[in-house]
Length: 205
Image 1 (cartoon, rainbow, N blue to C red):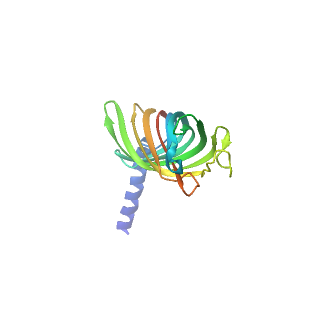
Image 2 (image 1 turned 30 degrees about the vertical axis):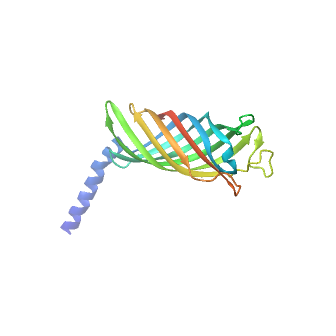
Image 3 (image 1 turned 90 degrees about the vertical axis):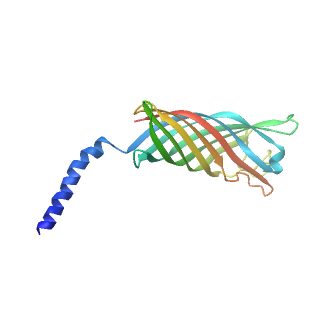
C-alpha cells in the first residue's frame, strides 16, 4: 500500500513539474514560407532530343516542425507551387514554355545545432506532389491526343534536401533541392522527371 502511494505521488509530482517545462519549451512550431525557384525536366527516350531549360518559378505554403531533441527534428508541410521550363528542339528554332501549378508535401529528417547567434540545420527526405495544371503554350498536357504530343501524369514523388539558418525564434532563410523519381510522361518510349531548386524565407509563429 505504501509503495503504491509513493508511486502515485511520484507520478503526480512528475506531471506537475514537467507541465510548465513543456509549455515553456514547446517542441512544436508552425510557420509560413515563400520561395523563388528554378526548375526543369530530365528527359529520356523519344523526348531526349528536346532540351528542358530552367526557368524561374515560385512557391508558398505552411510548415510544421517537431523537435525530437535539441539536435534532431522532423519537418513537413504543404506548398503551392508554380514552375516553368522552356522546351527547345535540337535546332532551337522551335520552342515552347511548359507552365505547371500544383502542390507538394515534403517530409524532412532534420539535424540542427547552434551556430553563431542562431541555429543552423540540414535535412533530407521524400516528397509527394500533385499537378493541378500543366500547359505547353496553352495546350493542356493532361488531355489525350493534344497538339503538343506530350501526355503527363499528375502525381509526382522523389527525394529532397534542405539547408538553412534560423536567425531568431521567428525568421529563417533556407535553400532546398528536389530530385523527381516519378515518370511524369505516360508514353512508353519516353520519360520525363522533375528537377529543381528553391531559395526562400520562413516565418515561425
